[in-house]
Image (cartoon, rainbow over all chains, first blue to last red; front, top):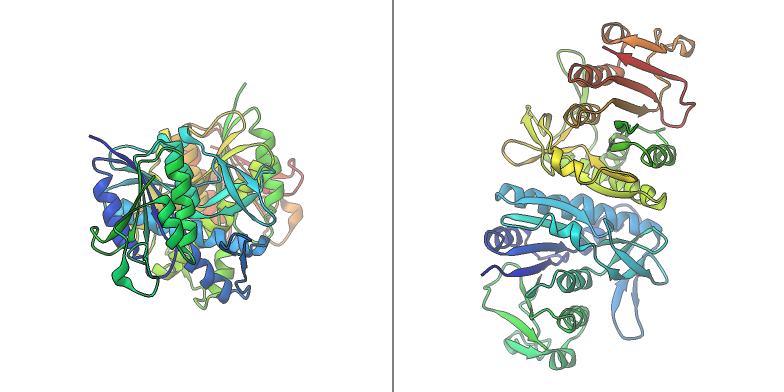
Length: 243
Length: 243
């Protein structure tokens, strides 16, 4: 049976692109896959190299994000489209996958927050579907278009969740640089193999909070399960989240 | 009557993106348009800022190009996809055009030269056609895929010419930072309003030689006319080339 899944490749340092591409090329032979990627480490590098240092903002609910003015957005676009999207489409094509690079701004609508970031309101499903199929994978950068038709950046995990809901995916797989959700953030031996959304929210800290928020959006939208694991690690070492 | 045209927006300093976007949005209301853009000035800036200086190579036939090693290709991708393609799709969307950013590597095959550059062998017409229509414009970055499935950069004028031939365009419009072809390169009053390919080849110098080469490829492939003019200038000040 063909499954349908969204794979989110984290943009943090330590996410191995070749491992992601190997996995995507393998599962795309039988399953329908959309690859969504982040770009945070590459954006950090560009902000440092081009003299526009990173500033972090924390929302009242404790979610951290990059303060994004217009120049930051432009550097994020360079990292997301010019580095990550470029390399992932190239690596997939080298593995025999007909990969087409897209930006979430090719047909998304978002709600503008107080800066050049936003949350996704609508997904252009027909556009995505025409690039999905056996060994055909759309590669989506987390840049969206505001209601004023201006580009904004959007959280990659939440873009992946919204796309998973929109295409009625069976699963959302979040590949990152940690093994999964830990009961004690300082003790890797406390990995939670399987859990519910409510329990996951109790244990999540730091950057993991946003992944669990994305997991909630996916599962409440009808996605069967959300899996969080390391891009390069043993696929059996992971956290599976159900509703 | 609906015309079909490829518009090439030069990547040199002095090509005004807003003027290009205004023109494309205007003609795309009635005509079928593909926009192809360059990225040379933005690549120059990135090579300087990120410590990988530009080197120029000259072919035996006198055509200049950027020496392109893998790092140069990656910086070119950042400029082409992350700056130019991003800004053009955003500017077109702001003007009511359903613009989708594509890379020529989404479905092109090329012949590899001696470095990470190449010439186009095939164009993915079905991919382009599904984004063409009233106020719908594919925006194509000049990155292609080698026969070994590795990304390479390709000359934007020649990509535009090959696409024009492949989609059976009526015209190729090359928007650059000069008024057109001059009989005497040092005398702007010697602009050639209308000419043949053979005459154009006699007068072309420097960067103009590659545009005339692209014009030859377009016209010999069946494109009715090639127009070269300034992106921002009076549309009546231009060089029109016929077979």
